[in-house]
Image 1: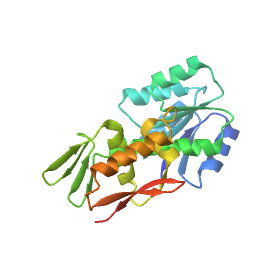
Image 2: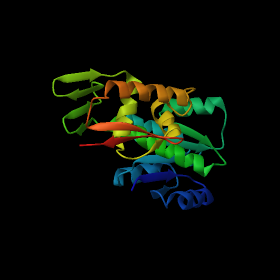
Image 3: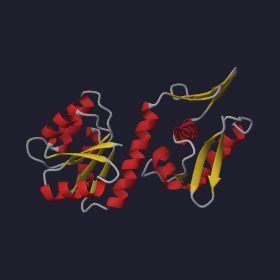
Image 4: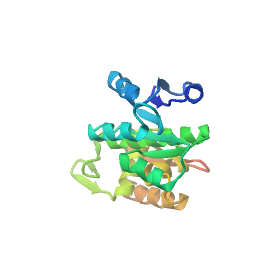
Length: 223
């Protein structure tokens, strides 16, 4: 199960976040940035949700310290602040996403899952399916002597689908993960890229991209 570190100085908010997230994720709670660093160093943390204004060490400082150490763990900032300057500072510090309070917990879950998928894509180097090798370093798909080099978005889309074989990914999931939550791209963009991938790999017997009508797409592994 995914391990999420929640950093929040308000006790009621900590309890609420824990109650809403614990059925889907392993949740560790911290009261400020300093305590969060200790928790991070003591265990495997897949994602951090942090408040900004906290005693001892605030959220900005926490993220800056993690990034200065080369830590790439995804971070979502939760705050009552909605000023553009605050968001700018948060993203400059190295946060990956930003939500204002009161929190819509369904949306928070969507954003958590989208960030975890992006993190998986970033951290996984290769996917091997039979004789097919999908290589993130070169954005290529290799089968024997045949090498297909893909544009960035096509490669990310294929890598995402193959990272979750036989699992349906909704069009919204794909847009958030490959194009980003704030992108103006739409479902037509996804459809176009899916068709391009199908045309390029229609003769590959190792996998197939299947349309789940009205829902999204999945990669079916055949060998």
